[in-house]
Length: 207
Image (cartoon, rainbow, N blue to C red; front, side):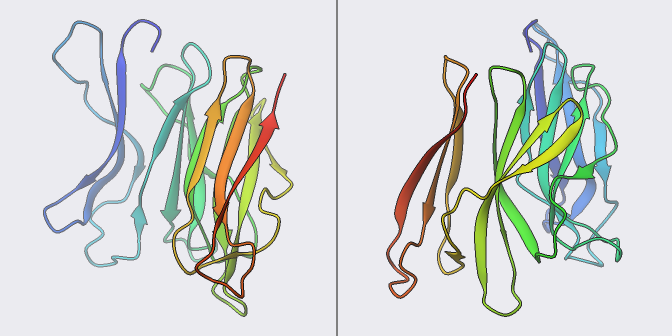
């Protein structure tokens, strides 16, 4: 934070890898050796009876003096929602309290994960992520969403075509000093050659 405060987001797990408390955030003021009591962004209770309920790979980023965003894939237990979505929570008081998480993506796809994020020169939050389906042709795509003035807007897909599920797909997004945001990902261009990937680049925003 601008005043030197450290803010950390983490998933509370027991020795068996089951979530005990969920997704937590703690603060440590500059010059202090003590961390605050945790703020619970999403509480899961003990998930050992249902190992499919999980939060993983949280991403924490700042877009203003006291404004923080948390993005994380979440296998939600609610039957009315899709089982694996990218979720977002925002804090406007430096991480002391957090909004009720809301989904970034809402589609008929089966899963979404591998989140990368950056803030552009206008303070807008950019998120790129992998979204796909296990039904029919098992393919996925690289998607791009922008959070601006409290609303999410889905941008055109970054991937030029389907991304094969075999193998991993790496995503990266970065902010440059001029206020631009750049995205890099790897993509299977010729799916007849499943072991061939190509590194792709696009400037996705610039003031």
